[in-house]
Length: 460
Image (cartoon, rainbow, N blue to C red; front, side, top):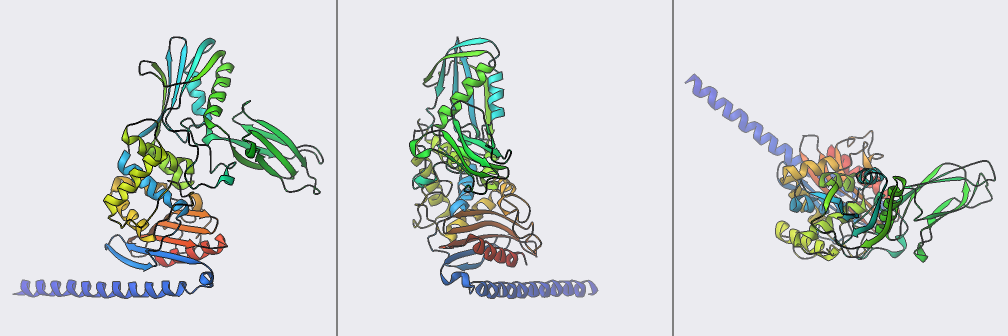
């Protein structure tokens, strides 16, 4: 009888706890809604708009939605969706390869859109050839993808900048040149250092050191003429660095390769663009992990990495060359099949640069939930996302607040657009998926400050 009383007591005790917890959850959700509604009264929305969606992944229930169905430009937040689809469809062991082969006195190099191929990777490849020999013909295989350099809806006047490189199967240093300008004595031309070093481009140093009568220092490529002349102008009073993309990135790759071979005493007599036969002897194979590409796309918002996912997804169809639209068919098909969303969206690229890309906060939220449900994919995405007040594009945000190091999310910024989406750690230990799409904002700084308040509320 005593045991039965104790058992009944425990049952009543835990039932009471469950009821109290349920009440606490309901009250907490109501308080959160009231606080969010209050934030939406901010003067920021007198002349701009916003969509918000929040979901408790542990309790599997929505917490908040405001205009969640509205079509918005996601900007770089789209990279989370692209990376998620790529990891799901290609697999976490997938690699993006660059191959060097030999057949007789000929060399072959084949590119498959490795977006992170570096100068040190080039040096390792060249070293595999050996020293002091003659190459009759260097065959360059660029058959992996078509010759369309940019995604649909990209702005033509963004051309010279690193965030919009000329895409090709062979990308050295992201298809860009690093430029560093250092001031010299007053009135003299500054020092200009570029890497990778190559004759493929030239530098016109028209700047002056410590001359206040000159305009602000600018570093620009003569892009309107499709020229690879890097022009430095204005007043140089401090060290300044920038990146300039190269017109015809595949030719940039090949030129640097031939120059590095020459430095090893290897003479290349001819260069021909043609497919690499299967029968060649492989001298060097650089394999780039899809995990590394995802990390760079998310943490550093690398557009080239995101667009590489599009082409490698398109390669699943098996034909060459791969077209950008092939990858977009895979991405849209994934959303239609897995998210069961109505066909009220348009995804035109993988990076969010396109003026044609429109999705809703609800769609992005569904993708965050889908990623969370696949632990292997979620672990990679979570590891790659910037951390509030700590890493990547969130390094300078939310430090010293309740949200510091508790937000893992992707930022997105283009003219008039400021977005944020990812995962938050709530005070009760729950993981929340959230999406904030600010649209039509004249000040990205003000939008970010408002988003920071939302994140603090999520973590409290």
